[in-house]
Length: 502
Image 1 (cartoon, rainbow, N blue to C red):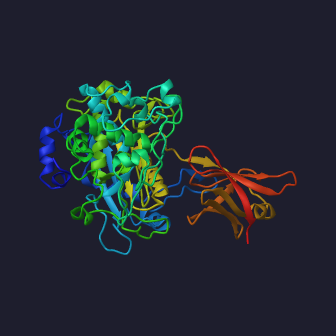
Image 2 (image 1 turned 45 degrees about the horizontal axis):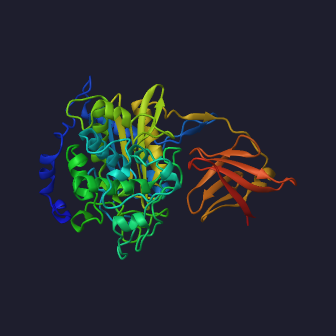
Image 3 (image 1 turned 90 degrees about the vertical axis):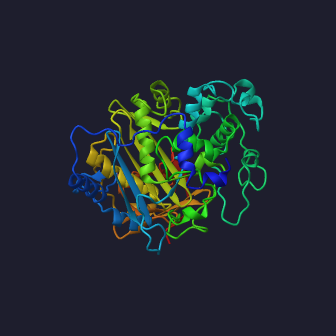
């Protein structure tokens, strides 16, 4: 089947018919107590009016914010949310517009780029092939690649790259991110992308440490998976993803559409930069689809959560057997399972994944033992903060563990000390934090992002309500020379002070 035929409306039923398992009965299960429409609406209102920061101050009343106000603050034009409860789609809602300055509203049917959430969907497809016996989870990947091979070197000579390692980001493969391309730019083939050949924008995907020895996030590893799955199935990537996951999970609106076909543009959300301006061409094209090429809706992503929960619980007709699903959601290395971030909160397994393409930010979280979860899709570069605030509100409404607000008691610092901290701190790579006095408040701003007030725990240590931490460093003379910033990127970044505040 050709890609052009796949993108026509008659393809969904064909792929559902040839899928390896019957489609899941989405919403077939009911909760122990039926929820009335008015109760559901009350929950929706509580989520969208109850956004909050992960940190609150002990000397102030809890802060609750409306989603419209936070969308304006973060300059995110649109957001869509789906909540899953007890293994069924509980509700889904859109807010805002598909493109800044345009009237078209975001609805439950609006398509968003899911970015790296593409990866766990690919992981599910891959594990279905493992269950069928088409691929070994722990055998050398090169034995099943026919169109390309991972180049041998001293690292692969010591340990072969395996499927498990690629899924868990421990294969030693390079390229954390993959290339994105505008509407007037030539697109590389997947083989060109893997070897870093023009017109690819990224270096070649290679192995630069012993596979299995440690964890490092790798979009390049998922590009290898994309080629592997195409070689094994003999189909194009969008075709077999439709057959293996999207159709049987009921994700009828979703697809690895790269580039996005014209007939879907009218129902798709445009991406926006940090200032809320529509990005050039409205969205990017990602030929390395396994790493970030999924277009989806919030209810479809909710159906993916349902599929994960059904497999984890061993439900009949689930897309994975219970043992394979539990292996997928088991700690492998570095806090990751097979395609999913995995952690345990109050003894309960939680899986998740975020997505970050230029112009889009997304997240989904699932509590598979109880069949609960949430999917949040935004069309703005500052959507990462917005998605966190919405998740915080939903967790409060549905009593999901692990999102409890932390209460902190800041200390008062004399204004002359605060004034000494003001300045520009450069992290390199075009990133810098501007710290300045705003009246009697100290505020910090990353690049052209929003300014957040800093609260002190000592003369050198500060935090924001969003969870960012700053530790200022002084030299032997007492002059402030640098800052260690915990920006949510893993280890703290060190910013060198370039100048004092003007």
